[in-house]
Length: 381
Image 1 (tube, rainbow, N blue to C red):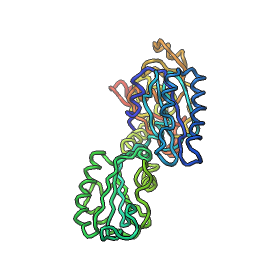
Image 2: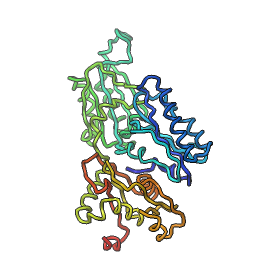
Image 3: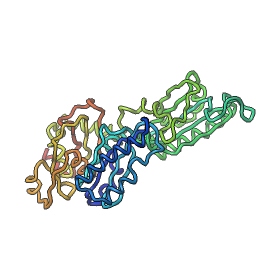
Image 4: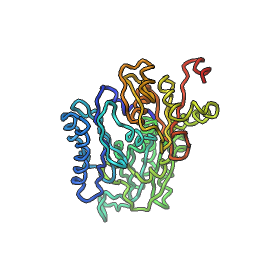
């Protein structure tokens, strides 16, 4: 997974105020609950020395996602009186957190971005929930086909879906219209480099989907998964949530993006030859120090040391202040290990791969895919 979505956190030196907040709307009086949670985190920031302007900037956006239904959270980052990054979290954080320090505390957001799979979802139904019961324009709902589709990146699309396109056509025109929709879907998938297509159809209604699927390019047919729901099920879902969210989750949860699969394949081959240099906190930190990390792998739950030491340069990360000073660092500060590790990963241009829990055990829960600049790098292994 590319970490470009965290780039705003490298554009300024900090210090940073970082907040992860449960902003779910599935409770009684959610505004009151969110307000209470925010006040606790606000006091934590103040106690850690956050300046009033930065705290005030966060207050303006904390809980501002009122229009988003269901369970979710926010990851907020501010410095010098302005919010640099505010993103929705598909899942509320396990616990609310607030931290004021030199580095942004972004690991919760990074983990929830993964696996970052680009996809297209399609919903087909004869039952149009947008029409009133009975007849409209002389047609009953079952005489028409509703098709809706959108592109997204899983799982962030759960709370930040792409633009949805919806069409309503008569069943008698479906074979002709399906050719146009298939082309629109192919164009959408190509623009977003979709790796998966999830198509929802009514149970026992293969004809509608068959007509559409047979007109899709072969590479999309090969990446297609068809799921079924009872006819009459609301395909639109809630405002602000992904189209057929639960069905997409059933297909994509537990998978990796194609890029991350390639990283994992390379890692497994590398570990077979150089185990000590491929996994464990020491191996990862050493690779980051040398700018030799192509990708950092996390296999939850991680078992990192509580703290690491960092300097001002991307490669200045170590297990002790003395080690950093020996490398020539002029400024050294102690940071939470996951914060320091993610920041070094981002600033050295490495990817992050979050593996499904317990699927690929790693020493300390972390590993590294090494990049080689020249033959001397290979000889050093």
